[in-house]
Length: 308
Image: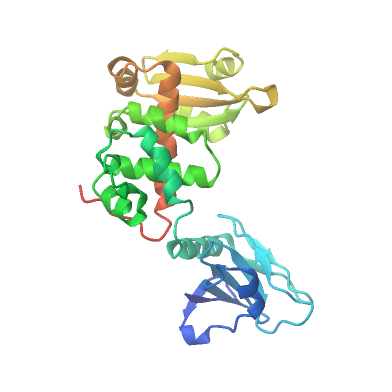
């Protein structure tokens, strides 16, 4: 895809024959530099979005002192590109978001299949996909095709794959608790859950507003934030249950998970599934991570549809 940055900060799509000539150095230094998205900029500059999800800032007419450089585009943030001898080129945040979205939609999702399924097998050992003596599940195409018929397997796989790609091994424990809870339970309209995180004391202002709307008073929340016991379980007959779990081994790394559960969901997890309070926290946290992973997966190439 070839785009041009207009003077108003918007994007215009151009025909591929207008593609700039890429310096050979880009391809020597970046094995994934085959262009997916190219943005033409003022002063003979351009941004190259590569298959590896990397952005490279380069010039159509480079001189000896002007080398391609890496650029990082962050969601909802402007990016300012230095242009020697002239004013910086500023790409507005909404345009940055469009560029990121276009590149991700053409990119394969991060992570590796084999370590993901091998770890997933330890968590879902009784699942039919892992009972094949030929170990067909190691074939990524086969496994992805199989997941089209199993939404729970799909969610667990991508949540685990993304977490392993980020080096977040702690997610495995939360996924195990999520699976023990039987994840369909979170889909029922009456089974409402919310989760917020805070460093030591109260969560942020938006979270506090939601908690107050759920009938937990500011004074009560302040009092709870000062407690050192963990977990804390609070029942509000007008709203439901508030559970606060504290995590971390050192005083400077302690953070809290604040979990709200409707009456119905708390009853299902605590008394029907007979989960401990700790496992309940892990299961709800796991559901939160699954929902985040599904949003992330939707950004990348080849987001599968389910045929259930």
